[in-house]
Structures are given as C-alpha cells and as structure tokens.
Amino acid sequence: MIELRPFEKLGKSDHGWLNANFHFSFAEYRDPARVHWGALRVWNNDRIAPQSGFPPHPHRDMEIVTYIIRGAITHQDHLGNQGRTEAGQIQVMSAGRGIQHAEYNMEGAETELFQIWILPNQQGVPARWETVKFPAEARDGALQPLASGRGHEGAIPLYADGALYAGTLKAGQTIRQKLDGKPAYLVPARGKIEVSGAGGAPVTAKARDGVAVVDVAEIELKALEDAEIVLVETDPLT
Image (tube, rainbow, N blue to C red; front, side, top):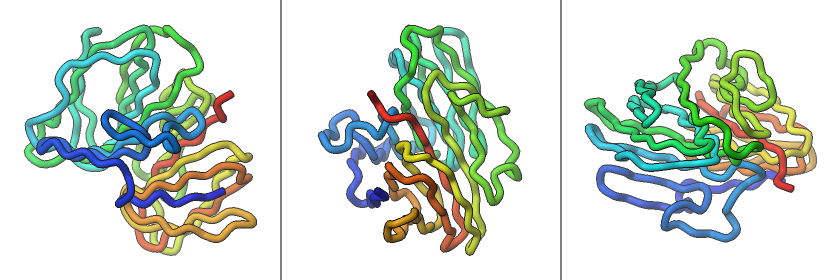
C-alpha cells in the first residue's frame, strides 16, 4: 500500500508565532486513524516566527529527531546541553528517563523544520542530546541514513527500531529504497516526487505532503522537479 496524505488535509494549528501541521494525532488534533505508522508516532511540520519558540517543557521515553529545512533552532536543556542546529543539520534527543528542554528560533527570519518522534525500543535510558552536520554531497542522488537504530555507519544512533534518511534529487533522477514490507513514511521538504512500488499505481507528492507505505518490498522515488526528501522506516508495532 502507498497512500498519499495531502498537506491540505493534515491537522492544523496556528498560534501566530507557530504555524504547525500534524501528520499524526498531536496536541489538539485527534484522528484515531492517524495515531502512528509503525513505531513512528509524530511528524510535525513547524514554521516558527523569529525570536520565538518553545519554553522549557518535559519529555520522556521518546526518540525525537528535528530536521531543519531552513533557518535554525537553538536548544538548551536541564543537562547543560546547549547548541544551534541549522539547515543541513539534524538534532537527536533521547528523552529517556526524562529531560526538560527549550527550543527557540533566535534568527532574524522564520525557521521551518520537521519534528519527528519515534517510539523507543528501550525505556528509561539516559537522556541525551546531539547535533550533527552531515556533508550535503552525501545526500545528492541518494537517501542517506542520518539517525538510526540499525547500526548505519556515521548516523546518529537511536534507541529505536528504525532509521531516518534524507536525500536530494535533481529533476528526472530516480532512486530505489528497499523496505522489505516494513512501514515507511516520507515527506518532500521541497519539490515534487512520484512514489511507486510493484503492483500499485504511482503516487505524486508535492512539498509537505505525506506518503505512507507498508507491505511493499521496494519503492522507487522519481523527482518530477528538484526535490529534498525525508523518509522514516521502522519496524511494525507488535
């Protein structure tokens, strides 16, 4: 199954300083048909106004990946971690046994990001935070693992049965991604792509649309225009 989830039909929340779009049930948006996808629990597309952000708040027992599309986010937490993550970087936070953190857009322009939560495969691990800049050329024409619980070399480790990939394609480029039937969810951060798998009709997704995939051995991604793609693949929940 390959299912398009158009951006226009996502959950919406506009607080003035924060324009949020929810691919899965989150905060005041509730849809019993969209609670998780495998171990993927949250995929929010946030646009944060300059000089604003999320004041200190707690999390626990969740793997939280923030993918910066444009702008930057500044993080600080009760463990003493502090840092700035900009476009081309991701940050990973293992909430584990508990973490109190804040995230702000301290820039002079709007920041846009994907915040992605993956259910952990271990409870009560030590909380941690990490940010890494990955070479942009490594993502040209390929889906590069950036955060992974599957032992991918060079990726930030996750306490989760899954991995987050990102890549950029030029118009007309095609790549394949093996899934072996596992749940996957992908969103073009920019551009337009076509997603297809054996036995099913292709799905066209524009920037910020979601595509849910399951029970497909391999998908083919074709860029209909220059595109940036983020994909999360996880194990099913048992």
